[in-house]
Image (cartoon, one colour):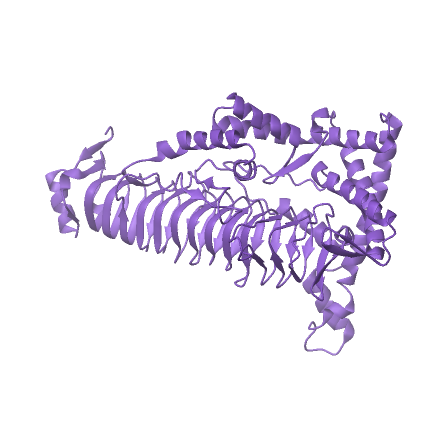
Length: 580
């Protein structure tokens, strides 16, 4: 191999004097400027390559390994290859549905959008098959090798067993207990960290991510800008911004910003996105008769309160807050921004209530501020609050609320196994109408030329909003073979993603035409923008009122602990809470 040579007899003697052993010294290759003083107390088996400036100390067994320039491997039991491996690539992950049927293969080029298509478009088997063939051809087959690798500048220290692994450039693996059949796909300059006590089998960890503190993972993918600590995870994929600590995750497609911090929390058999799990959050996917075949879809922005429980199958509408235990398989897609609560064993819905609260406003503002993706990230994310995907669900909520109220339901009406108090439905309708005006005004005021391709149904494809027509066009091009590589598919998705504002303006213009029953004039558009501004101000005022309730003296219990002076107590409260 160019740039490498065999050890000299003198170097072999020095290495033996420094505590090293080898089955066969002639199977070890070193860089031209190899310094034997950087290798001590190591046991070599089979073929080993040592790059320039690499430092190896106190390693029980190094077998079948290519160690890059400047890498450090020290105080570690075993780093070895045991035959040919693809280092996790190609391993199927039974995400979303624990019983299978939506398997997504691990590969280093996987993105949130590709995972969404592979998992959720099984009604297009030819499309999915072509995507899987691309991934195998471009990632799994080229990854296969008989040497594990430690990339340039990587640092492995105080670890147990690293078997059939590929550790990328500049990655830090510190105190890991077991890494088996996997890839840490770090690139030069990325901060990628695998920490103490971690055990992973059949895995891929992308660069700019952290897996730490005893996490146990099997058949898992950790994307760019993800974080896992003290987590137990199987058959799950985590994408940009996801941060899961302490609890358990099983058969989950964790889209961007899936957040869980508590030991008592279980996320299972579902698709999550911009999700926040309270302590004790739990779902059941096993109804005994048919096995664990049920799944949950938790659309963007959902929250589960402490001890919230959902019996699957279920569909949580966008920005829905779930409190209590629910066994009636709720479907709240047509009621976004709602509060779903349990009373006496029944599921009650407060439609649109989160439109008037500070919580949703705070969440929408915080996500872009917490975006830690780097230049190598492949996940596409749109953070716009006023967008067609949510807008069409608000429009559906208006229509459904009007329909239910037209039936004169009395004090309580039922819809999709949910109970709704009529007074709350009327309030929700008022809020949805304000939100509809706000959304239309915001999208129509954008300084862009409307693209008619944005009209019709939209999808939230793993964190980015796309017109269904644009998505179908991409999938049709995959079927036709005009998108023939993973890079080409990702490029087409990015092109549609980058055209979002024109698409959104096109959707809003089409929606306004539908509401008016005629083609909107310039004056109509200006009036819609003004109405949207006024509606946004009203909703913002409601959210501000809600926030003020959090700043009342009743919320200052426990502040100013060592004083009886009310002003001092409130001063402590305001200082800590940052209230002016």
